[in-house]
Length: 84
Image 1 (cartoon, rainbow, N blue to C red):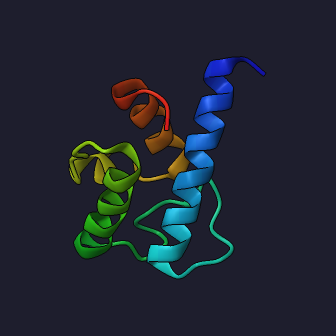
Image 2: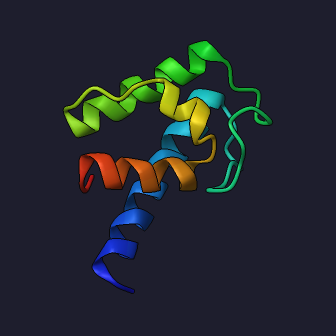
């Protein structure tokens, strides 16, 4: 595994944990779609708020809507904010 894929995996794992907690779905995976899991604007703000705490940077809520799976969002977070 390369360093970039290892970083993406760690970020995806973090996002899976955040999505699981916010959406109250313990079986949620990296490929679970935010919308299909019952996500809405309030939960999107909760997700970005938690992510901002880890990153120490503002994360636009629109990213959750544009990249609705933890895997897709992790790729964007890593590209835009560096490692988590």
